[in-house]
Image (cartoon, rainbow over all chains, first blue to last red; front, side, top):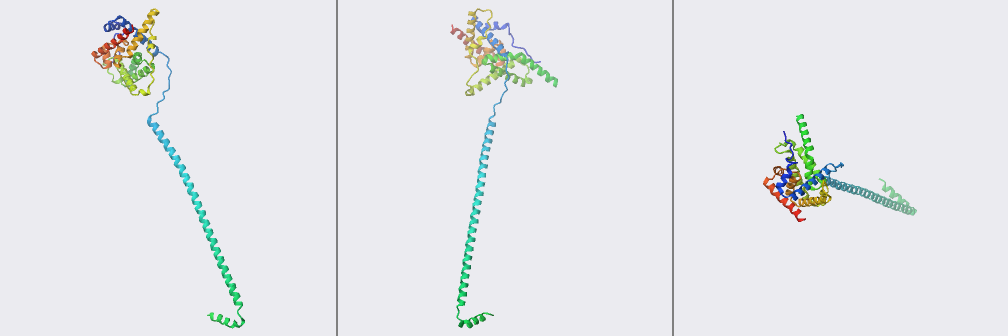
Length: 155
Length: 180
């Protein structure tokens, strides 16, 4: 069985003990008054009405560090996503510009080819016209010779 | 098994009801801080509850509890010294506060004033004692403990307790004498 005795000599012995310790009535009285005041103060404090306050545990350091790290990651991810999106848009614009340039180049090339073909056609027409004009101006005296040349060309 | 646990719980509840005011009083007189004394008292009984099964009863329950309270108080002051920059403000009441609680009894007004002044002087002397001297002094003159009980609670020899007590009393005597 566990002993639950209080300290011995609570009420009657203390005065004798103190006398043995201090052997001074004034000091003895001062110590008695000191004890009485502490007892009265303690009783009043112990029996005072108390209000319960919900305890809020301080945030552990590792949680603060984790929050900070997660915040940094989120900021970095947002910035990276923005930069990536901008980069993608720049790439699209560059591709559109390149395609437009290629289309213009092809258009100009077609135009040049058409003009060249037109010039060739005009030259051929002119030459044909000259040939026709020249052939029409051959003297009648040369007609039999011309017919011979035509016959020689035939296989 | 369950019956034994119930008995243990009942026994501990009785210990708390019986000794809590004394432990609180000792811690209050040591710290002069009501909130701190309450916190340390709660910590003391929490620790006691955790270790209740290992308490064999070699000393009285009060001595065992007092020993826990003294250690908690030591830890508190040590932590406070190490973290002084976090606790710049103390809640300890002024020395005059304790003397205000002195019962008037059948004394005249003049006697009451003189008694209050004596209590204030003793409080001032106690505040100037070392931690160990203060503990021994308060256990002896406030809790009225035997020297052997003080020795068991503090882990000191009786001779050392006597020496601390003698120095503490000399200091109180000097404080009282010096003011006259």
